[in-house]
Length: 246
Image (tube, rainbow, N blue to C red; front, side):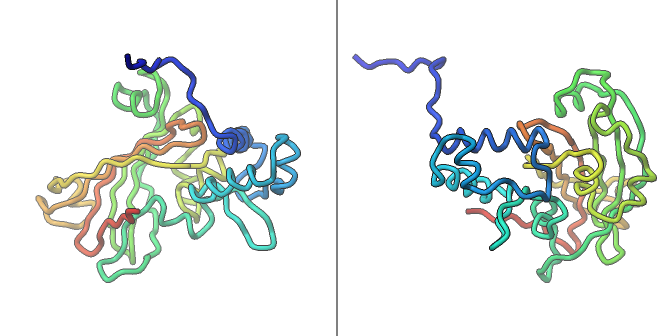
């Protein structure tokens, strides 16, 4: 007679995963902030009462997930959106000829609103909770390529203004990290092809009806908390969306 698994039974977690969870808890609470060094493997081993090898395995996994960065001879640091290596993680557009091209963000609008059913669902909020909505263009070599509409929790980003967006010289995620203490850890995207409507064709300088990529993204911070929902329209006349598998 075959035993039936109990769905309520606890799932075993390897010791290094438990240590990883404890380190992540420290990152989430701000014990170690973006760009700062975390304690050495030896110090963490003493703190958590485990072997240094167990800590090393936890940090190896965190480094593979771009949560921390190892620097030879200097130690391990909390990953930051200011790191040039982080740029390509959340913006996968490259010129058709290859390479990575620097983008320029052009804020168009920033206003306060109340979350509708869809925004509430995507951001884990209640309907009518305060949200911030941002519209901006992303340009490459002076040409608009992406038109974004971005929805943010008003509780977290309530102080965001159009002036902040215009004055900040780094990426949008660097602004969120440095000003609001929010680091994007991962994102889920849905991509489909759509024809350019009149408003998007005017923003992106393409003919009405031209093919665009619709990229809908939900970005998560520590604790798998959704903190950003964005809907972007991408012109691929001179760029392609690239993803590395495996």
